[in-house]
Image 1 (cartoon, helix red, strand yellow):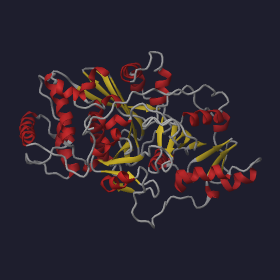
Image 2: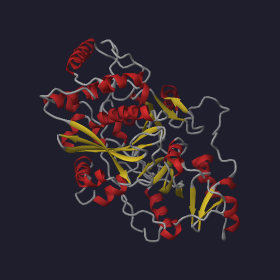
Image 3: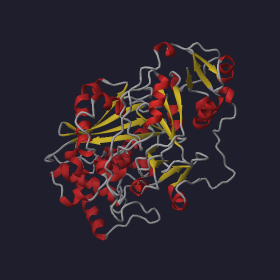
Image 4: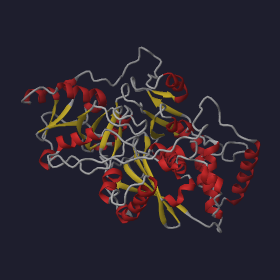
Length: 520
């Protein structure tokens, strides 16, 4: 049960699944089906393997849609960050921010282009405004006695992180199982979804179109920025990442870094700084800025999602966006900031105006949520923060060579307003049957025909992580870690083999042989 970097093993509590609940996307009262588990702790490697099998976390709750039965199948999507090139609409957002920082100008047209920013990043259909959480007694989680060696176009990128709903009954019932004291009901957030405008959404069969006028403007801006740039060091670094020459020609595509890291003129009216702070366990910087960050979240909930003032409490904010099961891990060949859960704070002229919640994992930056000051909605902060996170992923890759993907949560083709993530190219979708990554362009024809699809065209291919030996699954029972073969001999009462097999099948062989499945 070797954990990454010698950390403690993951401890999870499987909640089961099936029953139908209200869908936050299509509003079907009983169509939302998923499996879930509470993660008391997770190594970053285990969580990486879980999201590569279609799992996703919201706070400490980890869930996996029942893809072939749920009303709106949610496909894990990732962008190949090192190969990403911003589209015309992405560049428009970057230029808008640059213009605002430099001159303080923001046209009315710019502020009305993208209708989806109010949805920002969601927890992928899972707004868990926890009133309580399972609390396995301390005696059950004391040091282990092992019986064996425990080895949109523009605004919509974070639009999926809009506040929608998931299997709250599952969460509540699992909470009851985990703790006799966790009896308070969970509450969900009501959502006002904006209808997509006609013509919006990605058409991946066509390349982004560009007008000659826009190309001329881009060339003019590029020449201007080249003359203004005082510190070209990062430009060279970004070009090295992308395999570009140190002196690009003006007709070469501009990278995200060309817009984000350009030096502003001394007379620029505003300054924008992005600070990375560890949220779990909370760093001193996180603690020092907690109240300011929470107040931005509270106002966001009240203005954007129409929550009453007493609903977005500090406790709910903490459980939903600050608590994380991920263990903080630092490795010699890892990023300087380490792995785990973080907040990226956007400081505008000395105050926080937005916060991106992210997980840094062995292979990716996983985007969790975004909230922002509604006064700055017109800056398209949903798109802007996504582009910053892609650039951040490429920075981390310089130190951690395996870290090269940007995970955007779930792609939901059956919900037209959720298709915008396909605009972040090149991107891939996870096959729900073989867990192989397939370019999204190859998946779209199947999704147009059926909302649930197997993407792997090799009909002989199977789930390579399928559990072959149930007896090798690790169990945590009465403060002792043991294989399932030992546990089932010691267990009294009816067999729970069906539940354990379901859990192991969903998490896969690798995780089932590393993580500890808590059984009371």
